[in-house]
Amino acid sequence: MAIAIAAIVVVLLVIFAIVGFNRLRTTDVGAQEALGGIDVQLTRRADLVPNLVETVKGYAAHEKDVLEEVTRARAAVATAAAGSDVPAKAAADAALQQALVRVNATAEAYPDLKANTNFLELQKQLAETENQISFARSYYNDAVAKLNKLVVSFPWLLFTGIAGVRKREFYQAPLGQDQAPKVEF
Image (cartoon, rainbow, N blue to C red; front, side):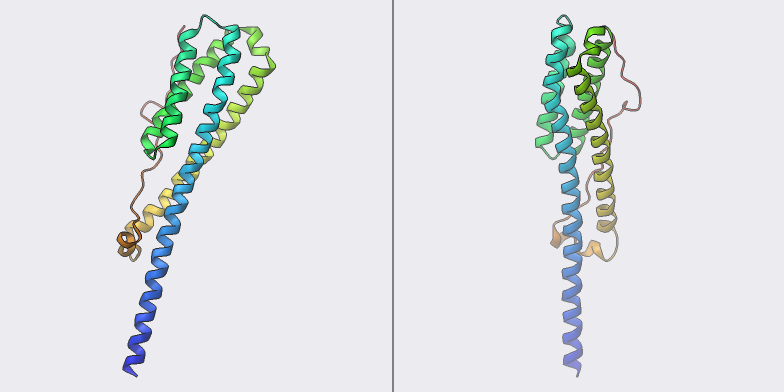
């Protein structure tokens, strides 16, 4: 009888360990997938930028520094999206967003450009992508919050080592992102 009870206890502990391990790993994978969603949207935005630059180039050829800034920021986003450094992704995202604000400000000086259907469509797609990026950031931060709560709470913290799961960083906007970018020509 004692052996049967001990066997039941061991089986229950094994089942509990499996459930704990799986819950942590599943939650961690969810956070990884959410970060991938940010990368997809950042890449989508970066892919739209060359078309926007080419459209603006035809109208604002002497605004070379603005267009070069956008190109540099786009390259930084592509590099950051390929890595797993969340703060680097946020910084590259912010730089590209600021560069795009300058492009849009440049467009204000060219009425023909503002009326160009290609430019208008690209602006629409970029605005849609910005909304998707915001959603992806929120989704990622929610997934990270869920994971981080599990990692620090009992009994799940007992399984973090064997599951290979640790706390993740939140996606935070770099300092100064709460202020409108300054645009000068």
